[in-house]
Every structure is written in structure tokens, then in C-alpha cells.
Length: 574
View (cartoon, rainbow, N blue to C red):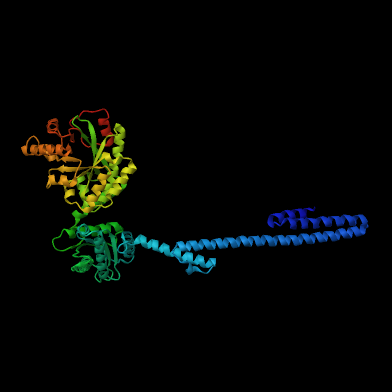
């Protein structure tokens, strides 16, 4: 068979498969043509043979051309079928995507791919715009959130640099909002925040910018560009007058549906220097002024002034340094041993340490109180708890003591956080620390300020196996009643009674009563502030089981404590 016919036959079988009958008929035609040429060559002369061969060649060429054209048509038809299939599949995929994006089938009945792509593009643009809105809006009040407010301040700062336009920032805080939440519930608290946002919306002007920063805090960016005499005092006077007008909107009771309550606010005002460049610093200034307003006897509005608020601003600067230290890992943990009557190591208490780069050592009471005041105790508390777990694991491994216990402190504001139990138990699980080895030390103030949220946290932590310790016992109110309220596993006798044990008979009687009570109630007793051997022996004779103080060891880093107790050391005076 000639090579063109062979290649055609092969391509035909690949591109357009036929039935067996069709293939046989085509093969028979080719064979008959060949036989005819052979007969002609046998019976005709050379001239006629040449003519027959020429005609046969033309016939074969014509057949090949026709078959090649037919093959191209078949290939084109196959490609068109494939393309049509892909279009139908794409159309189905677009239908499914549009349905997933929330569009009903009757809204895209037309079948054109171009139309559906246009619909999909429009929908995606809408979703992206919605996502940006969600990222910049507060979910409860639908006001711009803190991030959006900071962006707006940056825009206004750029405008101020170009045209020397002035503006002010008003920091607004709802007074005693926690009490509203605790008394009436979180649903009423949310309605109170909605009422505040509505009153603020009706007060601000067209060129102002209102935002909810978070929690019970709002902020207003006040446009001062229309002031004719833009002296510093004039700008402050206008901003103060505007803040007083906002205050007047809160003179009436707020109707929250099931209850009507009096909502009061405090406002801090900061007139922004056009040369400023840090939005966070601007917000800090107005926050400092707001804190001053809260402590004033009558007026609940205060204007930031560098000279009159220097002390508060320095305090806020220390808070800013604390926040940076928490986020950069600038705080450390020290561990103080808790020993038994044989001076064997039972556990350690984790104590936070902060060495400020310019101010030196900052006492824990100072920076923890500051964290409470500026509402960052959640962030600081989580950081310290995780750092305690990390150091505890390192120490336990170094001492090869799997029974070693960890004690750490929890503040009242942490107990009032609804998510506390979830976060603490999550950190314990991720760290691989058994909750039964952990003791949370709680002060008497925390119990006196108990709420349904704090009680739920304590119950969940108990159920997880964490033990509770009543810290500084004997210094607060109704201490015996607090034992029934908290139901602790352990009581820590305040160091004031321990230090006065030899000189004050009353202190000794208190310790004796506590020791006798703990025996009847199956409570562990820990004496803090043991600073000499004589005190240790007296406490042990009175029935105290565990001891903590400088006579055994001062708070030490993990490596130093591991070295001290790695070779079964005896206590020495520090």
C-alpha cells in the first residue's frame, strides 16, 4: 500500500474510529484498485498502461485529498465537541460558584459565560468590599473600629502637614460599665453600648469621625479647621465646649428595654499638634486626659496639657513601656521554693520580674497595678502564665522531679474574664503540664469582688484538677467566711503574722487558730516570710506543713534554682 494511504489509514483509525464493516469496505476498494492496475498492465500495451497508471494516480490523489479533508472535518468536529463540553462544565462551575456566593439560580438564567463571569466579578468585588468593611467596623455598634480610627488619624495628620489644618481627639469612656454588666448581664451591657453610640452619633458634626475603640471606649476625631483664630487656647476651648455638649446628651436615663439606667461618661481631650506623626501617641494623650477626668470631683471633662499632666503622662509612658516589654518578651520569671517540714522541695511559686532599660527594677505591685488600670491585665496575665509554665517545665526537667508543683497568682480582673478558663486550660494542654500540679493563688479581694463570671471560672478550673490557694490569709475581711466561699485546697498565712510571731502574742494566737482549723478542714498550710531557723521551728511545732521565705531561698532564675537544689542543698541565709 502506498505510504500516503498508510499514513492516512493510521490517522483515520486514531482520529475517527469506524465500524469494522466500514474499514473492510475501504480496504476492499484499495485492493480492487491495485488489481485493476495489474490486469491493465498484463493485457494492454505500454501506452495504454501508462495512461491507466496516470488515471489511477489521479484517482488515488483525489481520493487521498477527499479523505484528508474528511479527516480535518472530523478533527474539527471533535475539537468543537471538546470545547462545547468544557464550556458546559465551566458554566456549571460558575453556576455552583455563584450559588455559593449567595446568588439564586433565577438571577443568572442566561447561559453566556461572559455574563456569568461578569456576575462573578461583581460578586467578588462586593465580597472584598464587605470583608474590608468587616475589618474596619465594630460588630456591635457598626461604628468604625480602632484600626479604622488610627487610619483616619493618619490621614488627618497628612492633611494637617499640608494645610496646617487642626483637629482634636476626644477619648470617651463609659463610667462603671463593668458594674452594669455584672448587675444586669452582658445583653443589657451591649444595649447600653448601643445607646451610647446612638447618642454620640446624634451629637457629632458632619466633619467629625466617631469610632468605638473596644470595650466601653469610644473616640471622636473633631474637625477644628473652621476655627477663625486657631490659637492653642482657642482650639482647646472649642474642643472642651464640644465635649461638654456630648456630656449633656447623657443627662437623661437610657431606656434599655427591661430596665432604664443612668449612663455617665468621662471624656479626655487632646488638641493635636500638626507636627505630630504618631497616632498611638495622640490617642495616649487623650486617654491620659480621660483618666484625669475620672478622678475629678465634678467636671468629667479634662483637656490634655503637657505641664499639668506630666505625672500622668510619665505613668502612661511606663505603661507603654510595659506593653512593649510584654510583646517583645522583656519580662522574666523567678521561682521561689516551697519546702516541707524536712526542707525538701515540694514546689515553686512563679514571680514576675521586670528590669526597665532606663528605670531599672520595677516592682511587680507597680506594673501589675498599672496593667489593671490600663486594662491590659488579660494580655499580661496570659504572658506571665505561659512564662511560668515554660520555666516550670525547664526546672522540673533539670531537677528530674515529676511531682514538683507550680504556684502562680491570678488577679481579680482576670477572674472576671469569661474566657479565662479556656485560655489557661489551653496553655496547660499545649505545654503538657498536668493541671493537678498547678495551684492558683487568689487574694481575699478577688473573692470579695466575685461575680457569676469569676465563680464560673473557679468552678471550671477546679473541675479540671487545678488547686486553689487563698493568699495573704488573715489580712482582709471575714477571712473565715471566705474559706467557705472559695473552698480552697491551701491557705497561705500572710508574712505579717509570720514576721511578728516572736514579738506579738496576738500574731502567734492567729497562727495557732489557723493551724488548728486547717487540721479539721483538711487544708494545706503554707507560711510565707520565713527568714530564720527559729521561726521555721516554731511554725513546724504549731502544725504548719509547708514553708516559703528567704531563709530557704530568695526568688531565683531557673538555672540558679536548679543548681541550688540539684545536689540536695541545705538552706543558708541569703
